[in-house]
Length: 405
Image (cartoon, rainbow, N blue to C red):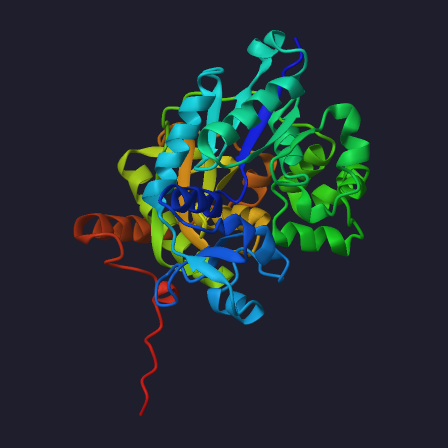
């Protein structure tokens, strides 16, 4: 049976949920019908636009830009602060409603999920009819709208849900890819971050169709395994498996919520440096090495994305973890402010397990000599005894702040 996958996404969730709540409490104006945004106080760490109305979009206001910029574009703009407790409650109610149709739901953020519609498709004349019942049911029951994308896998369903908004249903079946997806700008492709897009444009690959038909060797030469994945996505190749239950953690990792959103690569690298040291130290204490490294980003608006890579050789070296996490980050980062960063390792193996060496390992050994191995071991022992960061390389020490004379 051909899988039928829905991607269900709340339209401008934060603004819609705030508007619904205010109307319920007697507000005379619907925020969705006027120039309005959800944003933070300029003095707080959420001083950016988290969500905007269609009317605000007409003024050129963009999600992620500073609130001050938004008011310069539209002086009569209405702003409401975020209420994440209320958003979580709205999200819970939505997911409970969707599970009245099927338990095959994979929630991927506070305002979006995948639904495996396959097992209940026979109840409806067509998948679109089923999506229409769900979409209208949400609107009538809760007062906000969603977009629903329909396809045979999660990738294409998500791409479809991002088509024209709000309150729409779109299909993107494999036979529709050439017409509906290939003409889109390359930046619209899922997991195509800013760095990858810039590289592809230099190769004169400007649309998703250009990438789908590009030479694979050329793409992998410039973007390695991430380029291969993006080219597969451009051709509609993706998984149809909806994970209705979270996978049990089988690795070691660490993440941190930043006191201020990171907006530059340098800030992100500094965070990953500390996370890699922590994760590497925990792996060593457990006597394990990791074969897989994954990196997690949570953006300023709580959208989350993760990206992973298989290591050539299992490792617990913080430098390897750090370099891998940074590479993964740059492949998918959109350039938007980052609220949380994380590193997780999986496919763990015992540190004492013998490694299969390649001819390149034999000819060009990368392992340090005995002197450096002993030094590294001594540093690890000191950090384990007195706390991570008690002893660091001079090159990693933070530069002292300059003081005015």
